[in-house]
Image (tube, rainbow, N blue to C red; front, side, top):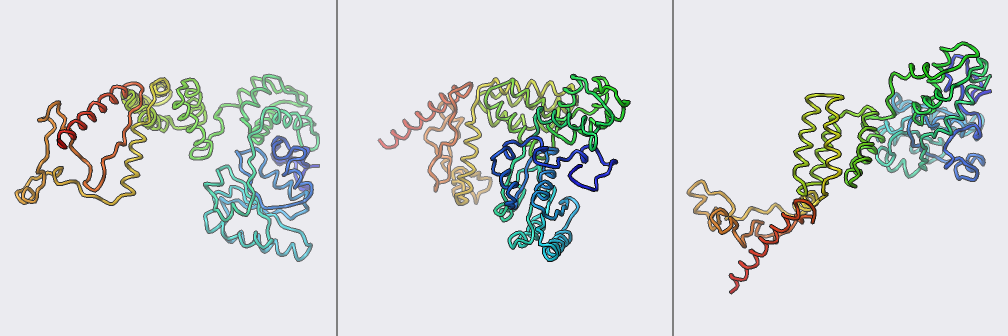
Amino acid sequence: MGLFPDQAAHQPLAARMRPATLDEYAGQAHLLGPGRPLRVALEQGALHSMIFWGPPGVGKTTLARLLATLADAHFVTISAVLAGVKDIRQAVDVARHQAAQSGRQTILFVDEVHRFNKAQQDAFLPYVEDGTLLFIGATTENPSFELNNALLSRARVYVLKSLDDEALSVLLDRALADVGRGLGQHRLSLADEARRILLSAADGDARRLLNLLEIAADLVADGGVIDTSLVSDLLNDTSRRFDKGGEAFYDQISALHKSVRGSNPDASLYWFVRMLDGGCDPLYIARRVVRMASEEVGNADPRALELCLNAWNVQERLGSPEGELAVAQAIVYLACAPKSNAVYSAYNAARADVAGQPSYEPPLHLRNAPTKLMKELGYSEGYRYAHDEPEAYAAGEDYFPSELQPRQYYKPANRGLEQKIAQKLEYLRNLDARSSRKRRE
């Protein structure tokens, strides 16, 4: 018998195969292995509010239902996509009724809790604090970014991981063999290569795996074999898990950026292709690659920025898949180029100074004087036109506001073209020093 007595045969295979016990639960050994804190808490009925954070299809809802079953608690589930404050109040009323009639605690399970706004999250906090409700939230997004601090402080976050092939394979075998809930009555077998393809297509998602298995089973007669050709035909859409704007999105672009920074062209290409495989817009990657050119390479190789802009242009003109080769070329070039974040660091240092200082006026000698009045007020007086100076450099000239000591934001790296730039700036600083000595003499 399954987890829920009212399960019907017409339910999807993934719903019918929900684990009825912790021993049937696949994966998450880091949380539910023998002696692990969460498993001990569940077995002892030591309930506490919690948040399950992980990708789709890894068992967040199932684990919440198991917790309710083990603790003999009433289970109320709402979806943050559809629910509002009214639904939360109804759940509170149900919880109070359960407590009064049977003394049972109520678990409020909020799926996709990150979609609740601040007011909705705040609505059930008092009832979590006074024990009316035990709160369990499920989210695919980073809770520290999406949930209120007040809610986070009252619930423990558990991170659920994508299921590995071993856990998924156990689910496959169980679904094929289980007569009561699974496909056992059909006596199906699964070819080895078909199994490998299914596990790969599932990409760590148990729900996706069982849905694919169920579709395949519907196309095979009892006693038949689910073979490679059948499974391959099912997988017209081979996109991996990838949520535009979600946690996986930012994790993968971060991995790409850091691989470029780390001068590893192979890993850079891997993450580029992973993002394309997941459905990411190539133009988004092309724009980010232009940013990488300035942030990670800068003046160590100014050609990198031009190459990346050209790759972006090619992607816009040719589209996919032809344009993606140009973006790949730019990524490899960036990874192999000499690295310097000197411009990036200088820009951030200048921004910090501007944000932390008053709005100083430009010195009078740096201001234009297009009118007689402005000339009489001293605008442009004493300005030294650099092109009229020896070596086109006005040695000793100060271009900062008079209230601000001259800064050195830009410190070229000793790599690539910036080696030459550093030498040039050092030469100019020596000219400044000689000019200063002459003025003192």
